[in-house]
Length: 628
Image 1 (cartoon, rainbow, N blue to C red):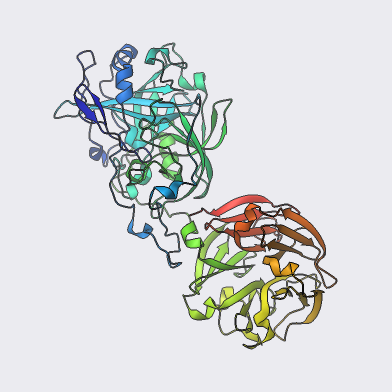
Image 2 (cartoon, helix red, strand yellow; image 1 turned 135 degrees about the vertical axis):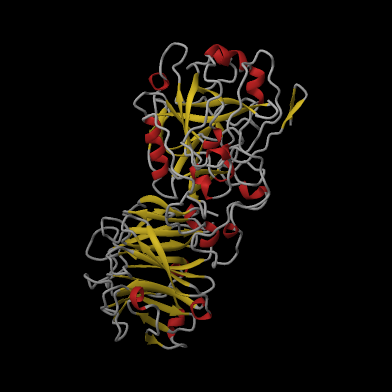
């Protein structure tokens, strides 16, 4: 709590959650008029009034003294102790799949491994907005501070910020330097002459309408007569491509930041369940960062980049707990770019009174859920020529994830609910064993029973074709993986790592049996340490290659595995590497090159990653599920 002129300012954190109350204007301040309440905008054009449009640069300099700047706080509401939606409550069960996951870890220690925002000198095109508004009944003045960025526009005079930061008398200060007064800022300051806000937006909402928490401000030229874009450049606005993105957040915290310097934080986004929004975890994003840009790429020298989000959304852009590490952004989709177009054309358009939330992009859920993913199997199960993935969960549920052909997934389908039968599957793999239109599953149970389950994408799991009975030697088959290890055209061969370290290749496996057996290695102690085994065509040769993660974290690739041997060993990761946290992996054809060289890994913290175009080294990393 900071005291000024006998009045308290309460600073409450959480992705930009702070509010200034009861500040009395001094006689030297220009007389402000009352702004319209946010709720009065329903059904009206996308506009928030600038109070007393006759105020000047001199008025702004006179009003915004260092003392007032120091006490300006984010206009978002104070935090409340509840979660965004009932569906996002914690769950230790894999039944909390289908995009439902915890929004916030419990307890301060949960944030220990998160990125932390760092102070830096600043970015020319990003700065602060200082705003004051007055209450219509009491005349009390509220001093606010948010973050904003200059964006491309024909008149070279637009900024992007949060909807809850709009309205009132505002000045934008690019590359704000706290040690300098308003009239001495390195790139000057710019008064906001007009605001563009979707008329349906409700200030600091916790409902779907918070998806519209973005705004554009039109700037007056600086004291030297120059437009902001001509002085500091402008950022390019792009659609938010998906839920999972790598971004760098930039903003100016007003609380827990006595230096009042800019911060930046490279982090990873994920879905905010039930909202057309993304969220990101980073410590240090306190009140004042509201409206700040989320860059997908940024040139720190030029001072501009490409923006795919901005701090805002649910509850004003921050979670309900009084913490600094969880921040939200609306998706930049159709409504965002419609408003952007209106701002560029200087149009105020009413979009009616109701907001129909767009179809939410598909999300695979959270790391909390994926810590329960026990087995993975790749294949073309749906017959659309795109790679799909089957997951067996710890409670026996079996789920099919439908690939999009571009290294991601577009949906999921439950093949079996939780059950004891699939809890006891030891290992499984996808392949073309029955000759049908889609891929099949081959599963080995702890009991030694082995089955082919044909065309599971269209027929379901069914009864299957039994290849071995319970009590058979296959109870010692610790890992299996299918590939083309000698039959060249189809994925009908099976590599088996036995409990005694023996490695066997079965060629031409089908509904009549295991085909022809080839011993590749006799029982040995080395292969007893093979913790995970999968296969793909990583080298482009006649045969597929085998990938092994050993118990010490080493990863090896055996190139051109076939009946004559495992092939040449190439080390992909050294012992004691991060790969000791690889819990499950599978390889398949998931992206547009149509080649089975994409590796999917589920890590110990639930993060699930795809490495596309893997060869002798790991391919391009793409996060599918964020860590818990």
